[in-house]
Image (tube, rainbow, N blue to C red; front, side, top):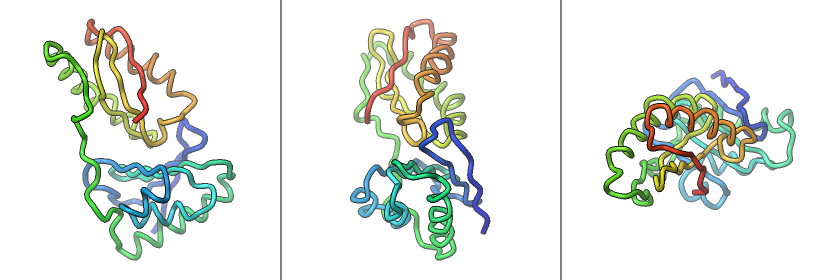
Length: 188
């Protein structure tokens, strides 16, 4: 098994490509060992490596966020852990991945058509590009012309996330949807 790595715009996060499907659908993010131990044997093993502070699973990738350790120390241990996990053919998650939840979304009912268009653009154009960088972005709300988005994986805490939001996503949404006046990131 050969595991490729890719840098991401976030210097604290690396993307690992095991060459197979990680999650059939949805995404899963873990920000602590306690959370990982409840739901993912692989994430728990990754958190046992000193310096790992976050794990994110996508369709065919894993992003790992580090705290203060150096990548040249962490990378071999992470690759070995991922390799052993996939060779052992154990599940990545012990419960289903997180479905896209619409419970916490907020917007006025009269904006439903605008929100549907925002979601279509996010799904078709933005989420695939963000996944290429080892992250995910989801709709959270729309109020007074501002779109609120949740950024996860390598996107969370990325130094270039503000530029991505303001110059990339905001410009794209404003181009297609004149009612959009701004884009803001929210904390999940």
